Image (cartoon, rainbow, N blue to C red):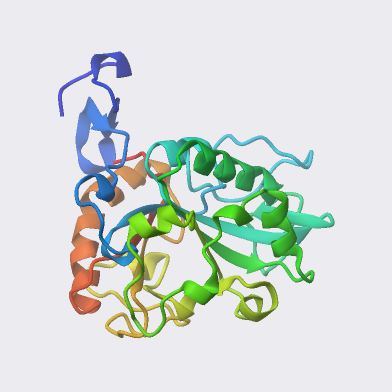
Length: 297
């Protein structure tokens, strides 16, 4: 909260910023590292913590085109995936598509990736995740795949090629019917430090990737998810007050991302919406909170 003119005026873990959209026109020191809940209370089941998630983690402002064609799409983040993880993000939303004979991350439409909506081969981002998990042996990362990959076994081969299977949390050990998850301590001890969920139900039986809405409750994304008067569930999800799943994802980002408005959304609107969704979910805290422009508060 101290006044500043540059990051050097702020302490470690802080940067200098403002939020004109919320009326804060004087730059001040702002935290740029998310506090890990496991540093406050240790040894709880995984589903007793809240983790920061970036929406469209790969859709980064200024990311150069890898196809030689100018990109035409929306952007949702301003930092690399590596930096997101270093700054405390523990969940990544990745849109995966068949493209050019491979799996690419695309911010696209109608289930089709185009050269003007493509960002990069998915393996490049997954290698960033592998490097982070390797360097941080007590951390757990969750990946949520918006899945448009239709080639058989292509996702399994992708995660194998990225050397991530050694961290894989197996479906056979995932709690069902709303039961408690293992403690974070136990997950780390078993090296089950990567949770992967897909939006394609068929992948659970064919490739061993957990179908997201068998294990998570989730509110509506986009504009309905930022209206503080209600917190409706996503159509694929059970009602938020259901006890059929023990994890709860709260989406909080508008349909059209506007970076200059994100600070107001994340610092003013989000706390209000957390209260709304807490009530809608039967007094359950969200385990994952997904936002745009995570650094902007």
